[in-house]
Every structure is written in structure tokens, then in C-alpha cells.
View 1 (cartoon, protein in one colour):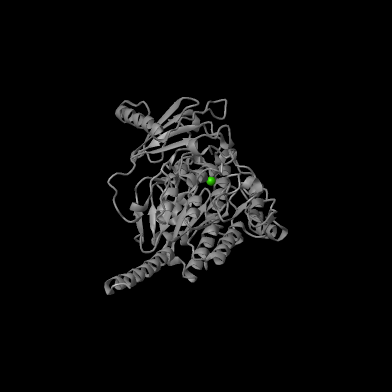
View 2 (spheres, helix red, strand yellow; view 1 turned 135 degrees about the vertical axis):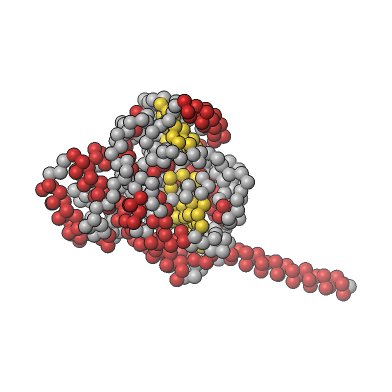
Length: 520
Ligand code: CA
């Protein structure tokens, strides 16, 4: 009925069809899994791989993050990663949407995130990925776009360091789990992969820690770290906030004046059970007694607070690092590591006594910076470092691009894929844009927006109409604003021009006044 040629063609087509289908299946099975390890307030200068920091180089030898350091050895470390709005909920909203705060609506932590909008996990789902978020969420509305989620529910979705309460899509009731929170979240992340790894579909998992958010409580294994040593003070610990806008003087985030007894562990955490408290008291009790007996005053008192705070911060980081190490080992033991991209980041940076502060919020370097480390076997050259200015605004498009999924046109970032592949893009952003809104709020940092190039940073505290200009090359610690200095006239004019342009580029028309939360 068919000529030999046609018969051969049919057979060939059939064979090609089968072969293509096999190829498609093979391609499907090769789509990478993506694990986004996320933490809260983890300043890059509290990660060994980031190296010593200018104003406190000696602190580096006390930072213990062997597992994150190993991740950097096996992947790419982004040395200049920045957030767009240095506070917990808003940074998460930017990551989910790929849009600045003024467009995704999450300006501050008092806002409830609108989960009906397009987010990258929803796009992953549309393209056959399984998705999950395990751990701290802090967007107040329930997660959307995730097949499974379990989020910290107590303390205003901040969660507690021990015995946290979880809300999940699997259970109707919130439930408390006994133990150390970083360990519990790690268990949940591993259990979720265990349940899903036999599925043909690739997965996106956010494994999201509360650590090292205030009030910095380590696991018992770390209670005795730094027991008999003094950590070095930053060079600008006794900053008097002169030579800058008045905003720096009227904040409420000084270690000397604003830390409370809970922060300092002079009052014990209320969420610990009797056995946990006994271990905690054995470690902290004798030091607290000695402190009370000593009646320290002035700088000696401030420096005692610094020691207690920074030690607890770094201990908590090491506790979390150990759990991340356990998670990475699990990926290796199960053979998943080869086809799983691992990203480590944190919602923003933090002050470790820099400027005499704790907390975040400012566009100053310590809180503007985020850590970003990406391991991608076969794509990212191990042990590489990238200096390009990147932002949390880029994460959604990057994650999608890693999976070969197109991003939405209205997302505002740039995929980091070319950088990850070691390419040198002809055009990369020359400036980043920042806008902090939360006022009045904890720590009373005045609202501000600004622009940062590789060398300069221009900030406008618009509710008090004061400006700062920093030359980061000459003054990396941002101790002296050179705004309105004649030698910087040209730079100032150029940066202001770029600031106006970038506000238009990103469509930011939200302006706060001193008296109201915000006007649009
Ligand atoms: Ca945070």
C-alpha cells in the first residue's frame, strides 16, 4: 500500500518521535531542583567566606561558618549583593515578586502581603515544578504558589528560637514543636524532600531560617563559644553621628542605650521549657551574676553589652550553619546534590556594633548588604567571586531562568544567569535604588530613599529634607557626608540626576510625610 520509501519514512518518523520523546523526558529529568536557603538578618560580615571587614578586621577570625564557607568554595560568592528595603517582610515580598516595595505593596512589616499577585513560585508551578516554603515567612497572609508550606506562626510570625508554633497547609490547627527552631526547620525541609524526591517533577524549596534575628539565641552546643575571650570592637563603635544628617543622631538602635534585658539574656526567654532553661541558666547564670555584682558603668557597661550581643549573634549563626551543614550532607547522601542548585541568602544585613548599633533599616552598607552564595554543579565555576552590584530584586528572574522558565515582563530585576556562567555582560546596572518606609516604627529610623553606584551613595531623608553623600572609596565606613562640599559638586549633581532617573525607571512615586505612614 505504501512505497518502500514511504514505509521507511514512517518508520523513521516513528523512531524519531520516540527518540524525541525520550529526549524530552531526559530533559525533564535534568531540570534542576532549586533550594533557596534563606535566613534573617545575617550580615555578610558574619560569614567567614566574606572575609574581614574594614572597620573590624580582627572579628573575622571569630566567625565560625564552616558549612557556608564550603558552599562558597564550591560555588560563586556575590561580594556586592544589596536589598532594596532593609527589613524582613518587605525584603521577602521583593524576592517573591521581583518588584520594588512600592509596586508589591509591602512597604513595611505592618503591611499584609497581597498573595493574589504574581509571584515566582506560581510560575514554577505552571511549569511543572513542585514548590514548598518551610520556616520563617513573615508576610502575614498565608503563602500562595506553594504546594506545601509550614511557617512560623507565633510572635507575629517571627517565631521563637525554641519550641516554635507552626502553621501549615497540611494541618488545620497551629501546633507547637519542642526543640531548637533551626533544627526543626531543617528536619521539615529534609522531610519534604524525602516525600517528594521520587516524584518525576523537579522542585523549588525555600528552607527559611528565623536565625539570627533578634534576640539571637544559640543552640546549647554553642552556649560556651567565646566563653573566655573578648571580641574586638569595631573602629567606629563610639560613633558620635556628627558630619551626617540628623537622622543618625535620633535613631533608637544603639547597643549602649536601646538594648533590653531580653536582648542581653538578663531575662530568660519565656518560651523555653524547664530542661532547656536549666541548660541556658548553667551557661548564662554565672556570667549574669558576675555582671550584676560588678555594677559596671559608662563605656565598661556598653562594652559588656557589646560582648554579650555579638557573641550571641555569632553563636546563633554557628548553630544555624551546623544545621545547614546537615542539610547539605543530606543532599549529598541522597545523590541529589549534583542536580540541585543551592542558594544561600538573608533578607538583609545587620550592625554588629558598627556605628555602635544593632538592627538594620539604613541604606548604610552594613544593613544594605545581603549575603549571596550560589552553588550550581556543572554551571558555576567553584570558588568564584563576583563583584557586580546585584539585588534581591533579581532573585525571582534568576530562579526562573535557572529552570529555563520565562519571567514576567513587569518584573524589575535582572537574571544573574550570565554572571553565574562566568560571562561578562556588556551592560550591567551601574546604580541600585533603595527606599525604606517604616516610620514611626521600631528603632525610629527616618524614611529615606537613595542611589548607590560602585563608588558613591546619595541618600535623601525626605521627611526632614536632609541629604547625605558618601564617597565609599575614601570613606567606606560612611562617617562623613560630603553633601554640598564644593569638591563633590559635580558628583553630587550627577548622582542626583541619576537618582531622579532611577525613581522614574522603577516607577517610585510613594512619598512619606513626617506625620502619616505614607501617601501614594
Ligand atoms: Ca530580617
